[in-house]
Length: 318
Length: 255
Image (cartoon, rainbow over all chains, first blue to last red; front, side, top):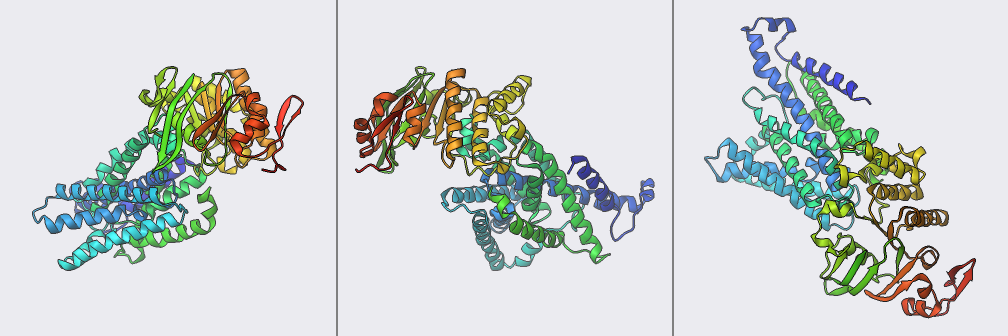
């Protein structure tokens, strides 16, 4: 696959995304700057598109970094407890600090995501049996433990429904003023690209990295900080989108290999394309209503993931 | 010159390397031999800074390796550990390019490209340079890794059991290449070997370890004889000479 094909697909899907919705907006409507339709376009449609693009690119890159650093193709923010830890951080900040500001919530969530992922990486170092399937299973269990703590806290304080609604991956509530945090993912993605070679070298293992004079621990920590930043911004604005960070980098790896300098641009654009397609579908299935995007992503994502598991176990092991 | 001075390493309470003092002669192949658990790989890991020693020091041209900057060290000493389970999908050329990482940090200039071309050609990998590592056979993969080390262009090349999982033909091929690296390019090669006959035929010097200590250290022909080998392996190993090579016939030895 060529990058320009993906970019064209992303542009076409972006245009469709801008003009699909309960209110019919045509490009010609935008000529009247003061019309209601133009306002809807600017307040709702454009922010939604930006949110999808940033979340799609961000989660895919976060997954790619995690797979490289953990040296396991099936590790991603959803299968390593990162998102669950971020969630837990938000809930704790809401429960125990009543006057918490939005900014404090972000910091809390970020610290939890970072520490949560670090704990998983430590776990990984201690596990002797590093089967490709076994490791993400442990990650999922670990994530579920964190998640059950969140549920318990939510249940105890009667905010369970809020919590569940808050974290359901959806772009329905994205309007201007509610998604801008996602722009923080842009510098994180740029940094990931600048450090792409270091991540590739680190992905060949600690001994290998040290032989080439790379400060392995530093790169590992930097990678985890980037993953935590991206995950936090996505969870706080959009909610949890499963599978994205898992399947997108794997698809790119199959046709392009694991040299991050080469694969990061593809991963970014493919992540956008996949999420855009799922979101458009979510908006069309029960038009003029819509279903949460995490549902669509989960349906397609799990199907692709199963194919990868059955056909690709040999590939992932290599 | 690498000088290993009274190096000691414990794993928990168990001593793995004890008071080892060895000098690695430049422009020669030195083989580390010895039974399983003798501490050969651990010693190599400490020399290459992958592992910290408990006590003792390693000097590279009189300066302590622990005090050297990591990218400077990476330009002078390369280590290749057993890498058969590397699960990164890179092409041969991409892998070899990473050998230039200590110099270029990933931004290859035309000099780097030239060195990469030479390293690939030196290992006869030109026609498969765009293949992915996971499509290669064990011997080709090992050659690709050595090609990367050549591109790293270090005076010292340390290899931890590079013949593992290779058949006879490929093992001989790798050893001949190492010989060429020393004879033609003036490299210093240190290698951990299990098969004493490869050590006997291809190395200039042998360091024999047992229970973490050096039992023998000297030119190959001083070590490859029944008396010395008995000390190392606790086996009676007849040594026969053939075409100027000493071959240890250990298959039928009665300990």
